[in-house]
Image 1 (cartoon, rainbow, N blue to C red):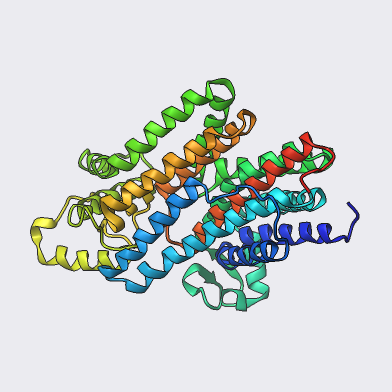
Image 2 (image 1 turned 135 degrees about the vertical axis):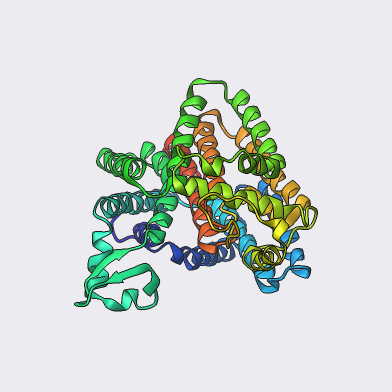
Length: 435
């Protein structure tokens, strides 16, 4: 494991990819396509290896089936190209993760070591940087934009600039994206650190993740990330001390219930006037209004939906319809409208855009994923279950499932979890016979 070896440069490249993805989340799209290209090249130039998984696993197949149905929705979607091509990107990311897992299973021990080390260090630096950004109102980014105005030339609505060119404020949109990615990477990073052989690297990763995650929890502006990581941590503790088989069955039941009942739950919360509850923070109350409105719109096309990634256009049509029909008016409390560019809840978004058929396929994704977790070694299950719950909570409150950076961020976290699992295997087999 010599410095400046090919494996060492692989670690540097991985650290750069992870750090870049977190600093500039929208680059995740390109970075994941880069990962796809690298893994394809690995399979082309290293043929005939006993790669694992040997076949396309059930969760991957379920996601592809879901994406194919989403592509078919382009036939009736008001956003034809979005409905056609966003699912294609989802398939590409799924293939990239599958190929990355297979490459990790046959990589030499030095390669796996340095890739894991690079991911861990890159993420650790990012935890520290994002923590500082949260505590200082994005001082680092503001300083860079002040000195290099070209950085904010194309995003004027997100930046407040003084007359002398000093950037005074930046909206929290990009910072929230950073937090989401760090929350997703928390579990792979913890596992990589746990199985790292160097005490100083391990302590750095633990300390950086603890600092960044604590700042996100205490001072972060992205409540979805806060709920997701808290739920993941509680789940991890439960998986350590409770029966994992029982826990998997419970989460399978909860997943099925949430997917099937997403629409009535959203309507129930809205008609219970939770959007007027003063004890809820404002963004949560607004979510209730958006969810209630989206759930009502689901009932207009409950089987087929309006089309993948067509919410923005479909909602504009709904706004015009609402303006023309006074009977559609609702008491929204302090909010002017519940029509939004996306549902801020993937479960509802699936129902709205892809109907009951899409919801059934989405349900199968979760069930097969939990089934795959149940087949892992017992020692690996707590982290995998915690990551599943973290993901389930994160998608329940934020973003659109078709944002390419969002899809890519999840793909990256899944690929790094595979690296962490391989690294644990290498610790069990010190001779590195996998290579």
